[in-house]
Image (cartoon, rainbow, N blue to C red; front, side, top):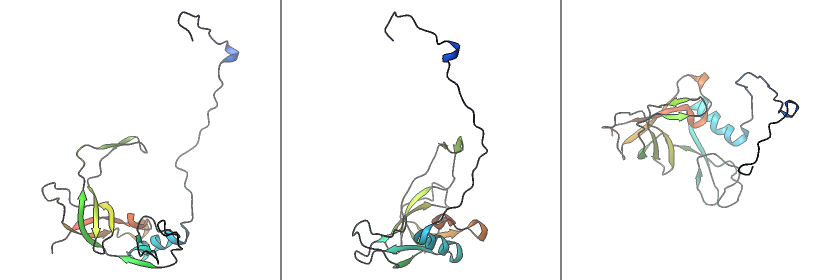
Length: 170
């Protein structure tokens, strides 16, 4: 609207009509994990094993997430699965000092476990949480081991079945 021009107020009949729809949250649903994610989730839940598939051509291990086709070679991944070690070395970590805002729950989120990049013993990098929260004890190069959720009913989330990685002494 140009400066100085009169503003026209809409008539009552021109007012927008709003429709209000009420629904309850959350909306639970079931979905298929498929044959690749299903294998990863089942092995984690049933056997506490970290699994990933490996390309038959380039031999690269696909950790997140298992895939039917190698994105590099464009070949069928088939069923060449490898069990990942549950021990590794902290390559990098981040320690949060200030709690972050979580838009999903509308509140601040302060996870006490620092996120880290862990170099597993077979040379594969994995992003996960560390148990150690003391900043004086946290360091790159420390050896860690996976700690699994013990409650069988709570497992079934693949890599998320690991609560965190605990420092181990060598």
